[in-house]
Amino acid sequence: MLATSSDELSEVALQPGTGGVFSIEANGQPVWERKTDGGFPDITELKRRVRDVVCPERELGHIDRKGS
Image (cartoon, rainbow, N blue to C red; front, side, top):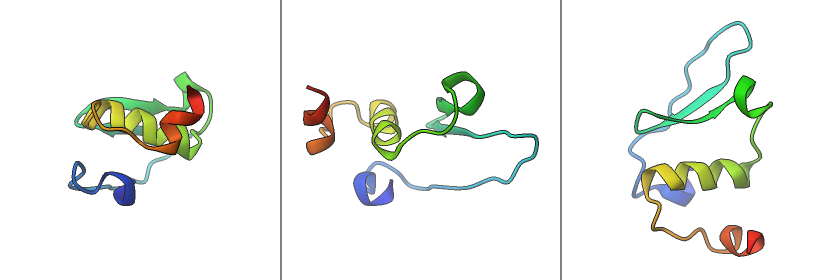
């Protein structure tokens, strides 16, 4: 994530938890929640969702073109 969005992200942090919790937030907004979204995201989907929160106008190159 830092390689793709280093100008937009000031930090990437991991917080240990228990009970099967796996969630990702960007700027305080939920990006992925294991129970709601069904498992764990692949990197392409995760990059797209983080981008949509932190800088929606930015293109992700080949990642955006694949879905078109």
